[in-house]
Length: 162
Length: 295
Image (cartoon, each protein chain N blue to C red):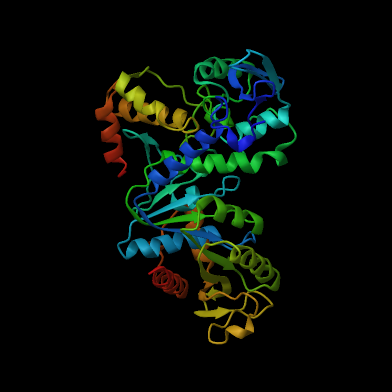
């Protein structure tokens, strides 16, 4: 969708995207020539259809704030379209296939992640991130290690024949 | 006054650019894959997933590098059948490594992510109206999976498709013309009719239709060591294809039902562990036909 300032015959530029409110986004465009501003207010269906494409809505600078606000509001994150998928939230307890239901096994000792390992984790889709984190931490603990670095990740790949 | 196509860009939201980036990521992720084969039907319950897994196994036994993407996100079964439920996902330098079966087939299935007691759900701004956006969301998820996992160098990436003739065509659209289709039916007129609709729908797409497999083509009775009828409709007779008119694509083979094979699937054992049986030989024959149809 594009917006044109008719008096100036000039394409309008996206300025801000307000966090979703009851499924509605408020997206402000302005004309670079005359400064006239308009707001596009989406209904929930329009918001959802665009989010379903797996895209970020809004300018880069706004995406973090929007994503944070979305998460706080319990709506889909704007930076990652899958952040709100039920099994994939960062806070979700991972499923332990051996134990059955989620969250029944308390992890005894915290495992730290190096920045490089954390960066690798950040590269993967949000919906598998909690599972990956828990699985790797378990892999490390089983070897008496309490820090996950890139060597551990490579060892896990090798161990599981990947 | 300027019209839509007179204006470069979209003023800053970059929606089209982001979609193009997603497509580029998918193309990059699949650059090392020689053949993309989608196993579909249109009809549910005909054994698409079982055939996909065991054909993959038969091809793997020939030394080919194989991966399976279980595209049935709402009813994933490959994780259980391939023995990768609760598998570990390990982040690589850029992408995620895929779990593998004991015989080395890489498998992605939502069944590895979501326990069978739970359904795949997405939060939505449009509650109660999922029919308006759900398919788009699922295809975006498919794109994310294709672009985020390490498919690497493969001879075949097999897609285990969900049921629905219209869904089959949507996958053809999404996966592009380089994806070939193998359809699965059973010896029932109802199933053949639905698969014929899928054939008709896919015929309008540029994708190659490799042929179809008639699954559950009788059942293998171990006591008698014979194939007995399973459906009232006669099994497809490859020697007399006119007996099953209307499909219009080659039959790559028939596979009888074997209760023991079903048990193996439930337990996640590979076909290689199944003793030499008519079913195993039939699957091996179909795998060979599939391979020949691709070359």
